[in-house]
Amino acid sequence: MNFFRKQATPALSSGGYYAPRRKRVLPSLPAMLAGLALLLVAAFAGLIAPMGGVKLTLVFAGMLLVIPVVWFLSAKNLLPILLVFIFLIQGPCASILHIRAILWVGSCLAFLFLLRTVLEILLTKLGRRMPNVAWGGAAGIVIAAAIYLGFFFFGMAIGKATKLQMLSSIRFGVPMFGVLMVLAFTPFTEKRLLIMWRLIIGIMLLQLPVVFYQHFWGMGLIGWDAVVGTFGPGMSAVMVVFSIAALIYALACWSRGLMPFWQLAVVFAFAMANMLLGEVKAIVFWMPLALVLTLRTRLLRNVGTFIAYGCLLVVFMAGTFAAYKAMYWGEQGSSGHTVEQKLEHTGGYFFDPYEIQYGTGEVGRFASLYIWYRDPTPDAMGRLIGFGPGASADGESTGRGVIAMRYRPLHIDSTTLTALLWDLGILGAISFVLIPVLAVLAAVRYLRRGGGTLHQQAMVDASAVTLVLMMTTLIYNRTLLVETSSQLLFLFCAGCIVQMCRFSAAQAPAPAPAAAKRPYGPSSAMRALPVAGGARHG
Image 1 (cartoon, rainbow, N blue to C red):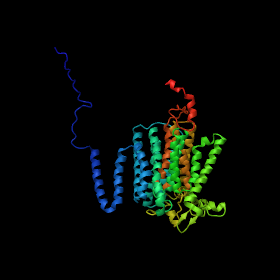
Image 2 (cartoon, helix red, strand yellow):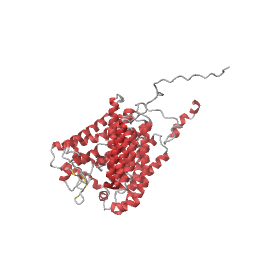
Image 3 (tube, rainbow, N blue to C red):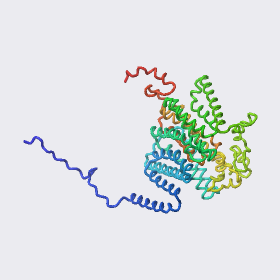
């Protein structure tokens, strides 16, 4: 007797996943094209290696690694890679290994990132998968950026720049706008944005060993502006602004109970060490401004708090001045018999419209604006739309522009605002300045209506304060136009504000979570009182 009958296995259908597949005899067309491209690139690398030496071979090998990464990774995944490369890898290769061509690799990576972003946006638009989401008051930021780029290319079309100068202007002025574009048109998760902001804090912490080495062993060999961290030659101010930006985000998180005080203390200590060792006198102004704007709600809570924070700021400014005098300036840094003479020696030359060194060609910040204001040659059209990108530049490899030739040997483009007025005119300069101004206004409206989560509010707050800080560099240096690191931080903060205003849900302020979930911040003990018996409710 058969107790266990063998059941017949049902026949599989000829279709579906288990259908028999014919073995491919030849590779697909994309694989063949990719293989052919790799063979051509390998052959080209073999020709470059004996002709260009080690440095050019390393740069070309880096480009070989970058192109496949850009091809296979989405713009969302490429953005953290761009942050790491620009903030952490590019600078040491240029300053320590003396591979100046690595700066072109950074620009090429940003340009490929821009192409990848445009391609994704076009495919999403054609596939009708573009999210139909309101801009939440942030559309003006993107419009201002588009108008600025319109003036940029129009000025290039009517200008008299050489082909090499045009290529250099495009390399410096255009690629990083892909960061603003991807954050404006592609929704990011909160976790992904948190990773990038924490990455900024991590990069800031990694600056201290490099800054320590450069301060005690590099300044004697190179001189001033040798303490640049991982941001490359002459980028001490950018390193300081980046350190302050990381500290601003930590303060924004702490004030909302998202970071314990000991972590804030660590970030503050590292940031202050970077700034004091970097010898950038502007931190006497930048740090109080950042602290006041970030902690504005606590400062304005009552008169006692305002007075206490005010005293701390005064002590901080006095301590910073005393530390700089002891470490760098000595008696010469504050020499003079009157207060006016002391201020003149320690930074009053910044506002001098006649600060021009004809021997070296150096022009003061306000002096460069005064030269533009008193220039007798331009007509109304030249004032409004400028003379084209690169007109005021005087690069070693690209030569002098049409305006720089007229004022040689002076470096008349000492600030971003001056270069914008010469190259793109008043209209182009206004459109550029409107990008951070409209971003800050959009952030203020976003925070007032209480949109998003606490983490999103902290990111918007930090982005807005960082943009206010970077707006002061318009009359301090020209890194916003010619340095990828400064441009990346600038457009990343503006893009974060657009991202939150557009894609985070605008909602009323969320109630404070239980003390077990939000244990940090100065008032955590008070928040814990109403929920002391919350455990009974599960």
